[in-house]
Amino acid sequence: MRRWVEAGRLTATPDESGRQTVTGAELVALAQDLAAERDLAALDHGVGARSARNHLTGLVSRIVSDPVMSQVELQCGPYRIVSLISTEAVTELGLEIGSVATAVIKATNVSIEGPRS
Picture 1: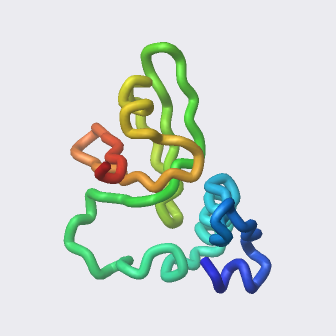
Picture 2: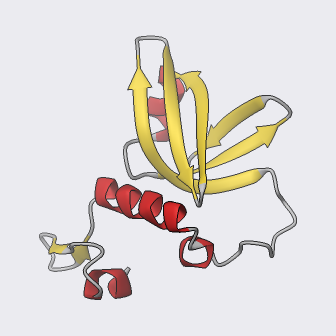
Picture 3: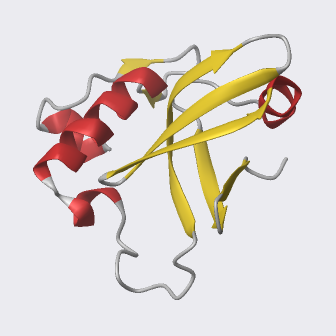
């Protein structure tokens, strides 16, 4: 992150305790740009080194919700993953634009995992 800020690809602003922060939305935009450039190593140093090919970790790039269901889009390296999950699950996982999440893919079903609390 620091290198991307220094290179002008991200904008960091200090939070109330003086730590430099980047918005999740800006991070998603950079991830999408890097995916378009196919700079996989910059996004994920584990590319090609892991055996679990059905877990894709990325950033939440879009959420469209109604009272019952939500469409959640992740930018996982060069891949855009879309999943339909309950709006209740989106709330329980604390998903928002810029959140880190993992798509777990089994056959034709895609589930979303959030970080452990």
